[in-house]
Image 1 (tube, rainbow, N blue to C red):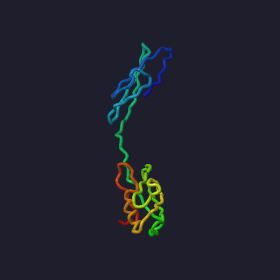
Image 2 (cartoon, rainbow, N blue to C red; image 1 turned 45 degrees about the horizontal axis):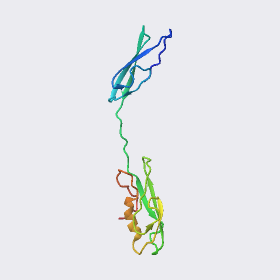
Image 3 (cartoon, one colour; image 1 turned 120 degrees about the vertical axis):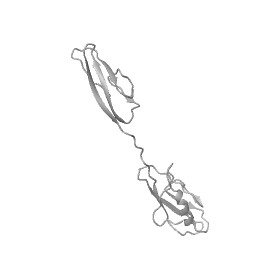
Image 4 (cartoon, one colour; image 1 turned 90 degrees about the vertical axis):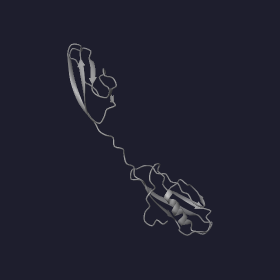
Amino acid sequence: MSADAADVDGDELSYLWEGPGSIADQTAATTSVSDLSVGTHTFTVTVSDGTEEVTSSVTVTVTEQIEAVNHAPTAEASVNSAQVVEGSSITLSADAADVDGDELSYLWEGPGSIADQTAATTSVSGLSAGRVFIEYEKYCRELVRPSGFEPPTFGPGHRE
């Protein structure tokens, strides 16, 4: 808060702020207030030149701070080939989004040698015979790990 005051005689001015909460400096032309509760509050400043004084008021409304709701991201995993020859490599891709605009992180887990476990797209080599893609698809539930949020929702075609 600040008081803009002048004296036509050039006399030195003093200030006195009054109101609720904790006023940082009650005798300054500019000050701040903390510890206000939710509601409407009036602050009054009295400005004096030692002989004459004038008062002015300002009303401040404090509203309740609403915590932002953070939504879980969505993710859909895909592979470049559902069938692969043993010893070949595959490419895994994650298409993920967050409606809140939060930064996402990735973690791929599964069989074989994963080139970059934290990339949205990565390659996997050293796979042995079996239903590798289905195993990877099961691991995709862990694909996006935002701290403190529910697991992601998967798109159409997700198999257990």
